[in-house]
Length: 321
Image 1 (cartoon, rainbow, N blue to C red):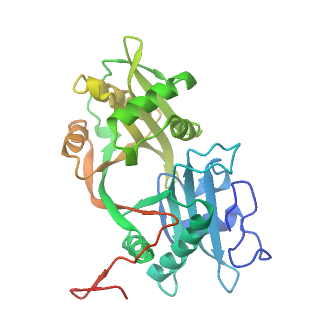
Image 2: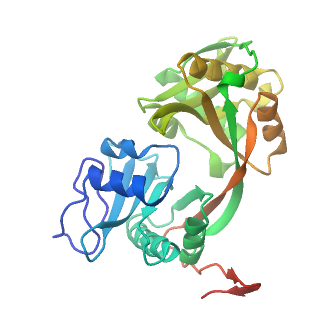
């Protein structure tokens, strides 16, 4: 059973079971096998309005698994509206009897609900954890892409100064920023105006615009996240109008954002980039970002459509078992 943030969260097996509270979820996400995308477990106590959470209880009435879903482009005042797509922001399972099997069972429940509620929507997630990737593939997800993870240790920051005027985004900027995003990114990765507004409404988010002659030339969306009790920076999105590529706009945006994080006392900033996009990876390396050894698999499926588990490699052979 799904519940909107702020509502009581129940086990899908029986509505009469004890409600799941934020404390239950925080314990699950902090102490067991979990995958979190860009948010700390503490965020579960006050989730954004576009998040939905599904939780499962085991026979002992413990929270055995939970999935945090980002319902994209759905107005909080109109929860019945069909979202443009659904992103898995977090998955956690206890998995004492098998972590892959626990992940598979949880994702099957998630998909069953999404198939009924919002058929024909793209549901995707990205993870570097084998147990979650295998669980998703066993549920019928398919690999869509691979993402590299890069970090910048800000105490090693080289001196960078923006060469373009940067300013905080205003509500009236969002349609133009969404249009730039549509020109810069393929449809799968595109962020609409409503999505940008959703993400920028977070208390820890900052949306900056690069101005060129009174027009937006690009934007950068960053967020402060807690890691081991310390705030670190995360670049959610950096986007430049394709007509202004190689004009220094991207460098100005990154310089402004990174310098602001450094002044705020952060010592590290991270971001993701597609492993296949060599130009983008080279750009980040020039700015001092270092690619880490871990990569994330981008996985996706379409709700309401037949799914076949991906063949699983076992001892040199392919198996669906």
